[in-house]
Image (cartoon, rainbow, N blue to C red; front, side, top):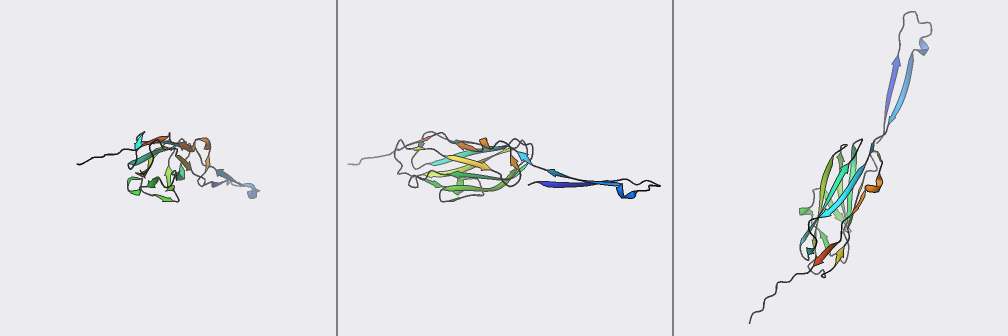
Length: 171
């Protein structure tokens, strides 16, 4: 958020005949600017049906100011609930509602970065050859101005699902 700095300079002089003009106030508005960005990747391509899929979201702040209300959202593909959010393997503070994972607001100083992990279990019923395209978004609309909002979205490369079966025949 923006702040205002108020400052008053005062002069005192012996024999001053007009002391009413001996001070000058000024207010300066301080605006926080930053450039938060996100880059998304996953562990494996292809992934097997029934396995854990972890998306790694690298969130960075190029500054010049701190971003203090960063929110990461990630809409999991809702192809008949083929991906189920796994909080145990995700970054603490992330939760899901209607396939949208939202992580609690956090801060990053200028030049800092952090990784947020979003984990999901791929349904064992997913057909071989299925492609997931997943998008993550980072925002901070409260603490200042993002000078480059074009880098606030990242798509994961397609994750191909391969079905695997372990069959045995006993006679």
